[in-house]
Image (cartoon, rainbow, N blue to C red; front, side, top):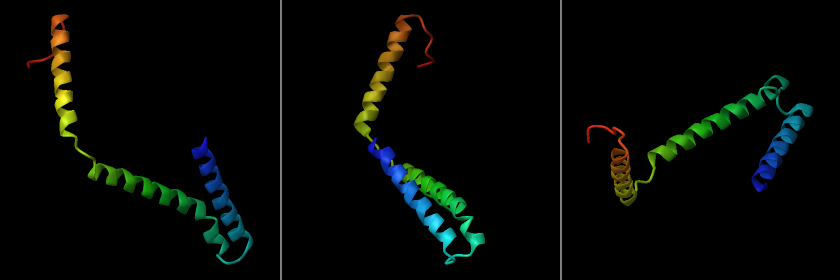
Length: 89
């Protein structure tokens, strides 16, 4: 619930700034109408950057990889006992 209220507060603040820019003539009206589009594009770029950054610095867990391989071997043995063909290994 806290996260939703934070998002709503940010959206209200952005909307208030946008309406204020529309009402005052500090920015030309033709540019002000494009501000929501710029905001969406900027948020998309930020999202892509965060995904790329997360992929570049994704932590490796060698111990977890060993445990996962053991789980795979156990699952293959279990399925082989049940008569399921699990591959060449």
